[in-house]
Image (tube, rainbow, N blue to C red; front, side, top):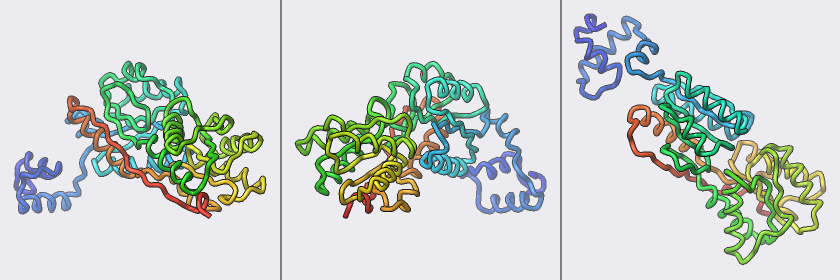
Length: 324
């Protein structure tokens, strides 16, 4: 290659690795030789030379969730821009499953892990970290030296609750977890909005679920309807729960939003095609993925860099389910 182009091996390496200190004339000459000789870089050889595999891992609770499948697609896209390949691990969201997934990934040939935990406590994460860089996504806040990219779920839940209040709703129920993780953050934002409006959460207005799926939302909405507490709106802690809740309301002959308004989180594609269309909190998933990959690649190249906390922007997508 170098002989064909009439340059040194170092110059060829500089062109292949996009170093800036190469003249345009030399770069053109080397690229012409690459094309003529049909040269393709050997990933294994490059990994051995640089001490890295070129693989990043994404560990998420459930790929069947439209939010996480979209996130996986965006992370893969962002990784390709950095010349990396993504390995995807589905953890199941339980403590034992998350721990097993992390143990497997930290002993495999990945350069770093993007992790969305549901159950793993901070002390377990510290024990598992070792020398493998770990980047956190989601609302868990851990006192560990790790980069973190997440939306402010407290503020997002507060804003979408404010929207429901502004539409005249006074009896707003919730569907989702309220004791830990993302659900706890959204519950706090909901409470904050109510109290700012001079209201308090009503007993019987909180329906917890075992999982964030459509069927869980449908069952939770049925329980809320059987309670004696008046309801004129329901805030679901993800869109799948909201879609299930809407199905139960329609089957009960309850019009949306005239009698009960509905709002969700995540802005999955189904939210735009539901009937009525679903009001939802829309995080910038592309921004999340791009920043997560950027920070993780930086961590693999600069292990001692200070940890960064990046906040993901969001909007409230107001649709038919909350406006007459």
